Image (cartoon, rainbow, N blue to C red):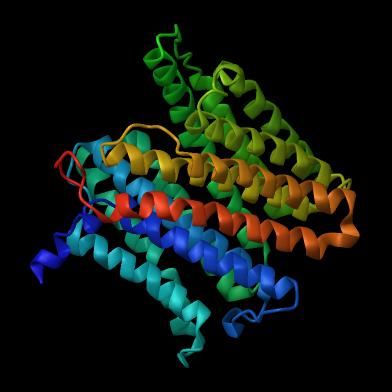
Length: 388
């Protein structure tokens, strides 16, 4: 039994969570597209199909990728041992249990279903808190705060059945993208350009980074107080968009188009900026809020998670950070999915069913491209013999 838990697959958090997240998002998004097209039924556990889709994209797929990234990164941040073996297997089982009770009619009482589904984030937070507290890594305590808010949003959604807590949860994910993106995008870009022999230097902008996070916090507060169609919310989202756009001026974006492993991250951040501008427009009732929402979720969250899944898998299994043809295709298709989901609904709203179904299919294809290339890397030991 002990040898089972010593398998490389349970050596680092990114391995099981990236694989499970990719498989599950293919299933869930195709089910959603099929439901919207009238060809499938959504599990009745949450009653509201839109609520099921939103919850499972945030707390099913996205949280799996967030968990895989944070569990892997915290070992680097603290210099401690990563969550692995039985500890990691337990976390994965909690995540899988949540997906089971929200997708199958288990006959369990509602309070127990919701309790099982909500148990993953506290367990993840504790797994991260222990090494962070032990090493006094104060800089990254913010992730514990964001996970706490995500847990509160999930609880509020289960208790009220209203969609607003899930909108706030999306903004918490956006804050993670803003925080992590502000660290890694310029750093990865400079490192890649230097490997090519080009001159490149990072430009620290700590005040702008802090302003970016506070602008998103203000946007979340205005959304909660005033709702999606209010001038105050529009103003907060516009300010956040401007700050994030200004922050990007030092990211050397004009020099990344030769490398898909770089431009996917830059485009993911650019979709975030555009999504905040769309949120401002939705606040003024110029466009539906759902357009702004999917600009962020499909464009930014989709691009950033897919890009980081590929980069982390390659880097932590000892391989070159080079995008294969299938990887590049998945990155391109993710951009097409976002364009169709946003642009199609704006230009031809009467064809919304077609655009949503097409987006679901493209999203599924993106992760179907990920699996044959990266699943073997996630499952097998590193080729250089180093620890998982």
